[in-house]
Image (tube, one colour):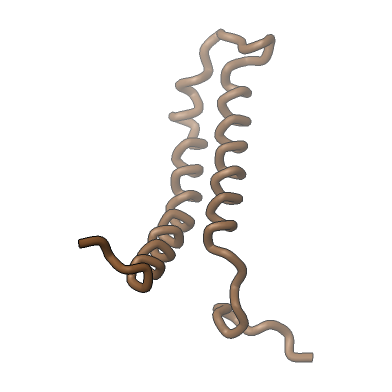
Length: 88
């Protein structure tokens, strides 16, 4: 029996929030020196060292992933923010 849309929306939102929490940890792992050094081979891609291509590819993937997750999370509605804004 498929879940109705009223129950599926909060579950999807929770999964997206969890993915947003995990993304920086994945980025941190991929940019650790032991992982980066796996790509420190004397190889080049279009004249650019492989390690440089790897670092920029990881960076680009993190930016793209953050953009997709930000769009999926949507704007913060009034009253949902963790901290209130300035009261002027």
